[in-house]
Amino acid sequence: MSVYKHEYRAYTGRLTPLWARLAVVARYAVAEAWSSRITVGLFTLSMLPVVVYLVGIYLANNPLARMLIMRRDSVFEIDASYFLRVLETQNWFALVMAAWIAPRLVCPDLANNALPILLSHPISRLGYVLGKLTALLVCLSPVTWMPCLLLFAYQGYSSAGPWFAGNLRIAAGLMAGSLLWIALLSILGLALSSWVKWKVAATGAIFAVVFVPAGIGGIITGVLRTKWGFLLNVPVMMTQLWQRLLGGPEVMRADLQLSSTAILIVLSLASGICLMMLNARIRGREVVRG
Amino acid sequence: MTSMNDRILFEDVSKFYGEVLGVNRITLNIPPGVTTLVGPNGSGKTTLMNLMTGLVQPSSGHVSVLGLTPGDADRFFRQVGYCTQFDSFPRRLTGAEFLFDSLLLHGMSEGDAFRLAAEAIDRVRLGDAGLRRIESYSKGMRQKIRLAQAIAHHPRVLVLDEPLNGLDPMARAESLALFQELSRQGVHLVISSHILDEVDRISDRVVLITGGYIVAEGDIHEVRREVRDKPMQVLIRCDQPELLASRMFTANHCVEARLHADGKGVFLRTADIDEFYRLLNKIAVEGLVTIEAVAPADDDTLAIYQYLIGGDGSPS
Image 1 (cartoon, one colour):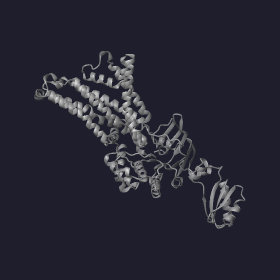
Image 2: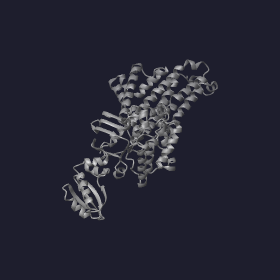
Image 3: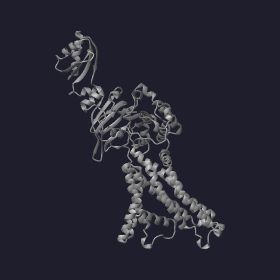
Image 4: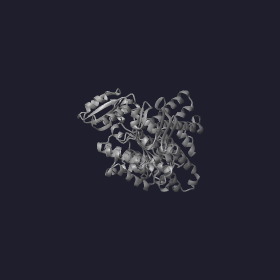
């Protein structure tokens, strides 16, 4: 043993728990996402419908406003259908934001071979993905369930009767529908971004994966006269799922309704494929062969 | 701690990427000190480094570093520091912030991370540049901040992939001095580099790899002696080099002689180094020539690379 060895002191302090290390990855990613003016612009844009819906709730609950502005026959109800429209609007804004943000979190790491550096820390590949996923969920939450629940709370505050207690299912549906959607978008966004190194192309691929199969599903439905083509149509599936979660009236004809089980199986399969894609691409090495 | 817990061990390790061979049936036992990985591009050096840093798992065989495996991530990565050849940094971060976040990822508290980041910047002599954004760094400074990232958490095993690339001569000398200092302190340093003549000065061992196979490994001089089919070259400084050359040529093993440019020495190539030194001793005792210095002229890493692998060791 070298006599000098005694001079060297390896770090012997306590280590922070794993979640604290994942938070570092998430913090990097959130900062990266919000460093873009386009992200800020999209977020601002996504708040405009919230303001419109907020005004709608105010008008619907304010007797003076109802008397002055609205004719009696045009007064609208604040119910599950109203909040379904809120949820749909906000969740499609979430798709736009996810398509913009997700590639910015993953593509540069893969294009620049940053993974060997990151993964030579005590965080696993799973930890890396969870960190990025957390960042996306954090970025998409202020666009989806947060404003939805704020509008719900405002309606509860503004309504005269015991509206709040009687409509808790809407709140639960808003929360569950939003979380399901942004989790799916986040996994899909990360998976596609890990395979397409060019950020703009990854953004396009995310839109394509949502809307191209929807078109194919529409053709299948039209030609074969079967509702099962809708299983390729994410917008239709999600609208049906959100409607059931909120307990609103059916939005499609009964013969075109998909069962919730079938929808959840398709969404689970899609998520499984995305996880396999991430598993194949998120690796701590780049093979260099001369 | 047992001796095996002080080693980097590869036991019959193979790694395939699908059908592509990474490394095949590697058995290595790397003690503390500086070990240089030498091989052409695509020979499997980076795969070997990725295996010892836990970034890839072997297809077969077993790798352990100081008795630890990557499965025990907290303890494993506390002991291992990796300076990759790739250069990617989060945008808008200063060098100090990058190190701070890297240390947080290692599981340090904020206080320790702050202290260790400052210490690492000091060690790689980055100075005030540590407070500047990494985007503004020169290639050499980026290399330094990567090195700082690898050593900041005080690892006992330091794996450095091309750590001298992009450094100016002064920075290279500083880095080599740092490697030597760490080596003296009992740290394992595993270095891959194409700058063989400089790394050679501080290396205790060399591992030559090509096509995924280990060609030779061990002390550089021992490896050179093992390469028996290539005659060894020795430089002898003396007052009468021509006379010495003619005397040496009486022995069958002496196959080539070349006068030094200054006329005060001769390069002799011999197929039997033991017999060569015996004869040289005899000549010295006879007093036929006055010998000032004897030094091997081709038992460095570059020569071994040329003999065993071919080329000049520079990136292709």
